[in-house]
Every structure is written in C-alpha cells, then in structure tokens.
Length: 301
Image 1 (spheres, rainbow, N blue to C red):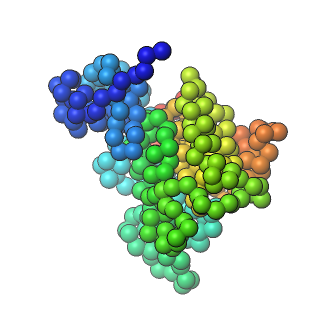
Image 2: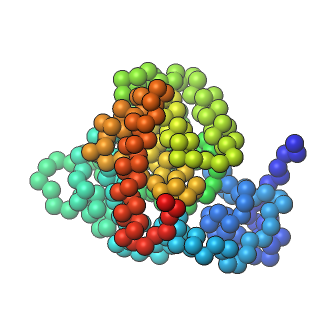
Image 3: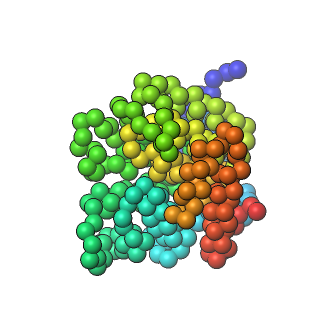
C-alpha cells in the first residue's frame, strides 16, 4: 500500500488558490478528508480536492461542532459553548478534588474574577480552571483532527501549566510520568512502558474504519489504565472523549458529581461488564441532549 503524502496549509492554499486562513478553516471544519492536526500544524493529503465553498449538508451547519466553533470565535455569551465551558470544567475538576463551586467557575469564565467567597481557595484550583477552559478551546479547534500523541500531550501541558505540580522536578507537564501511580485502587502501566502502550492504543483506535460510542469508552478505559501522566489523567481522558464524540457525530456527555462513583465502577468493571460504564455515560448523554434541544443544536438520535 502506497504511503500517503501530506502537504502543508501553505502548499494547499497555493494549489487551491485560497488564502492560508481559508484553507486552515476548511481543515478545522472537517471539510478536507484525511487532514489532521499534528501539534499545531495541519497535515493535508497531497491528493485532497479543494472543498466546495458551501458545506454539502445544510444540517451540519448547525451540528454541535459548528455551533461551538461559531460561538467560540464570536465570543458569544450564554449559548451552548458558554454552558459547556462552565459545566464540563466545573464537573471534571470537581471529580478530581477542586473545591471551587459552580458559581465560582462561572465567575472565572465570565469575569476573570473569583467572585465573593468566605472560604480559602487553592491557587491551583483557579489556575487549573482557567487552563481547562483553554483545553476545551483546543478540543473544539482540533475536533476533526486525528487523535495523536502530540495532541494528548498538548492537552496535559495546557492543563498543568503554572500549577504547583509544574514546579516539581519529578513532574513533567506535557510529558509522561516518571513515577508509578494508581487509579481507583488499581496499578497502572509502569513509566518505562507508557510511550509504547500509548502508541499501540492510538494505532489500534485510529485504524478503526468507523468509531462507535463503545470504541470511545473503550479507548477511555484503556487510557486511564495506562494513566500516562503523573496527574491530570482523568481530566485529559474526559476531554479526549468529548472531542471524539464531537468528531464522530456522537452526543458528548459530562460526568457529574452524582455520576462519579458509577463512572469509577464502570471503568473498574469494563473488562467483565461494559453495561455499568455505558449506562452511566448514556445517562449523562441524555442530560446533554436536553441542552442541545434547548439551544436548537442538531444531533443524531
């Protein structure tokens, strides 16, 4: 099988007689088949055809990816982008021990201030909240790109930048763990084997002809069992699930505090019984559907 040749945005723009900005936008909108983001650089198949000016499917103009991208770029307040930024950040951080309230998370997003509080607040909780907002922007920008090691490391780098952990000599932000760690009481992959196992996981996942809901959950469980980073694995893993759901037109979901123990149980029991995790995520998905219905966002039922 001949190896696919890739060209840069600059090269594709010249071939298609477009601006580099338009070419980059077509890639981020998923309108260039086979194009994927490697770090911050788009790789475009050399034989890719110039996209039509108008999307072929009108319905897709109002799917979740399109709406999130449009609202993010416009800085629109009080839409689905606004809600997901606050809800996903609050819940994912809260599961991992953040003491910030939902209102405080909202204040940080809306006003860049904490709001009034009568309790001490950890600086790391604030930093990781701001960083998580940036991570969500990254998964929206790269939603249609192929999942890669560099993209996953970039999420971790953004999430942990400026935290107390980032100042520790044994903690590498944006890179794999140096010390052993555990998840829900289970031993995880040894540091020296992480790179190999992540590479295998990505190769097997990206080789699938079609990605299903179960495939995304299976990737998540395997990712968490590897636990590649010293800390932040749960949040990075849930961000990846959200991204992949958007990419494959699957309604994404947010694991709330109420679902946390069911979620952990589902991960632990996945090999023997997939129903626990699947049912938990489907419950969370139903809540997301209510929000999509409210904001008039199209999705496949």
